[in-house]
Length: 240
Length: 118
Image 1 (tube, chains in turn red, orange):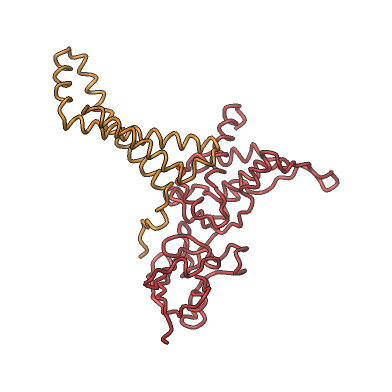
Image 2 (image 1 turned 180 degrees about the vertical axis):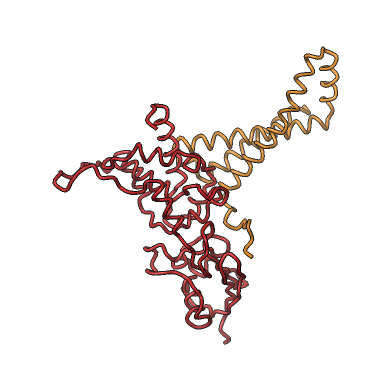
């Protein structure tokens, strides 16, 4: 029996480029990352792409698969290839393409820094543990967003980032919200000031594309709504 | 070149909700000057307003009015959903909530349509 083949269109180039079609044999339980690896190892050694863990922990293999941002390692071909056996693989959106499927994530992570995505400790190692009740509202709000691994799928899906390149984006704002709910953190007000500007949380249009595509089922939309409330309250109190 | 607008990642319910809310809002904003002009006819005297009201009672204008009510109703339910979402109600993000809002909007529009020709 003839081997079933997939027609895999892969973006070659940088900002300017084109889709090149490769024929890849279809296998059981094949992931989209398997397709890319097959092409790089057997058909096109010059293909550039990025991956590390292959199990959905590192967040480095995200690409645009059939128009949607996804982790390629955790996306089975059976979920995305139609009966015609076509798969289209492109780099993530909203970031400069270095080459082929690899994006430059520097602007993405720079925005985490601009959103003050760092923990600001208030205690030293000689202090006792800070008591944080698991059932507290703040702890639960932080829990809802804390599993982010920084894969930039949400950032790639966001229209507001496409419209305003300065917009901090869903991941950085989600990070800011988890820290805002961390009782041990000492930079709440400064962080709210950092995310309340024109390119901050209030620019979100609640399209929910970030929430729709997040592979960890996090809802940055809800986190950003939290930041909107918190920053509005802080502004009313004259804190920011 | 990759297409600058790719609809494949935007086919979800919340994106449709955004589109309905935005487009109905723009359409209502465009209608507002006409609305104020019609109200302004009252200042010109009863004849001017009466003439306008006669014109507005034509079936075609009544049908257009239904479209206006539909836009208002859809914009209202969409706006309530966004308010709930921004107040922190996770349920406002669900597809069922979005569909319910659109259904309520359509129902209001239909009720108005049945009312104007009753």
